[in-house]
Amino acid sequence: MTEARSVTEADLHAYADGFLDEAGRARVERFLADNPEAAEMIADWQAQSDELRAAFAPYEKSKSFDIRLLSVGFARPAAPPGRRFALAAAAVLVFALGALGGHYGPRLFERPEIRLAYTEVLPREARNAFLVYANEVRHPVEVFADEETHLANWLGKRLSIADLKVPNLQPLGFKLVGGRLLPVGGKPGAMFMYENQTGQRVTVLVGRNRENRTTSFRFASANDVETFYWIDGELGYAVTGEISRDMLQKIAEECYRQFPS
Amino acid sequence: MKAREAQAPAPLSFEAQILALLPQLRRYSRSLTRSDTESEDLLQDCIEKALVNRTQWRGSNFKSWVYRIMTNLHLNARRLNARRPSVGIEDAEGLAASPGVDDPLERNRLVQALETLPKEARAILMLVVVEGYAYQEVANMLEIPVGTVMSRLSRARQALREKMREENVIQLRRPR
Image (tube, rainbow over all chains, first blue to last red):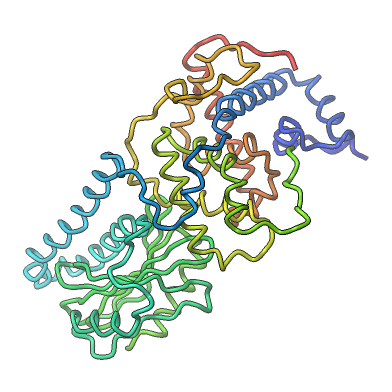
């Protein structure tokens, strides 16, 4: 008995977007006849939709250079200054945080009340590194996945980790893009980047912790960027991505399993 | 809703499919971004990514696959571009006026109001309204529940409506 079913907001959207069948439309229209405010709202939505379609319709066209976009390595026009600047600013931020950590780190870590400092620095740096590098299309990493052994040896040496292994996240659908060296808490740290088939990226950060302590998994979230981090003895780890918390936790657990304890 | 692209009898090459999709992709790109420059950047990044990841396309629903790549690229990029000025669409070069719209000023105000939306909500609104995707298709594309699609769509529409009203311009409505 359709009459008895109340009209939901989802029905109103579907009506405005033309997704309802005849019976559904009739039902919503009876509802709107008794609810002038809702009727007005839907009319506004539809006017919005018309305007938006009209606004962007002219962009649906080919351009003479389109075919060249298809050859990888197409020399694109220089990135506009705004983007360069934003990237540079974010990079400066990452390195400034690193430098600050380096300058104050050792001293701060001796004081018990700042014990939490590393656990604050770690997720923040992990997030900044993600924001800077996950965004990079051409140079997200210094060493690409095809040189995985070299990557592991190189970063392992810089971090003084004898048998650094690059975590394998293939079972979770994330393929290694590569890695780079970057400061974490003012000391050399490693970042590994992974990507799934839809282009979502996650980064895994490994840094040296001064103090020898171990934490459970912790979680930090800001503006949809989620970070799982933990400290295991002298090493701190952080897994960052803009993906569901569930998936990120699986990745963190997988890394935890694979990293040497 | 718009017809899905017909399956061609002879499969097109990967490049040919992208080329055929480019105009729509350009429209979607522009509807997500603040300026023509940003839009062309996003378009290029998207094509590059699609080409590099071509082996990962599973042979069905090419358009959704590419749209998803573009959406993810855009959402990943968002915070770094945080404060670039939005360029009104009337500044765009070489665009034919679209027929049937009587108030370019009002339309431009609406496009400016888009800048106040969260990027996810804006993308969903564009996918539904401009690109003609059904709610479930958007949910599949972005790998989120359909309820999330609905709530973001709703928030986007209400936010635009309030924005347009608070600026206190009497709205002209075309009879439907």
